Length: 191
Image (cartoon, rainbow, N blue to C red):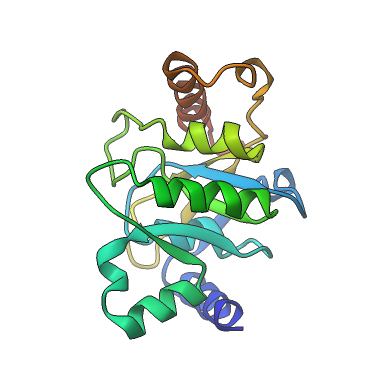
């Protein structure tokens, strides 16, 4: 209920201040586990990636945000769950995999933090994708969040994972991470 209300309010907010041009919604399955892997350019990105979808999108959020109980409860109602920054959070990885195995949608930013165009990505998204069996959708955000200027969201075709399924080695995770980031970076606005 809170999620739907906030999504509606954000749709109105973005409609006025950052009109969204969205392409590729047809690539997102109506049910089953989906991992939305996006570039990260602003604190607005989680909302931008998820508000045009009819399915609830879950995100990791830094654990510090949950220390103030009212804010923590609000974030939890929006589908967020805590992750400790500065290292591998096994609990957050486990929660992510279970969330996807339960058939939900998760949004993740493989670069970890807001980044430049070619910054290095971490292997967490690849590991979560392989262990959960989720459909991986590359998402590209284009724009600068300038008032009354449009933002573009491109949802790409699912990333083919079959060549990576047999092996969870570090090399495999790096190759899959490179493939996901390559798909994100090569998407262009349709002519």
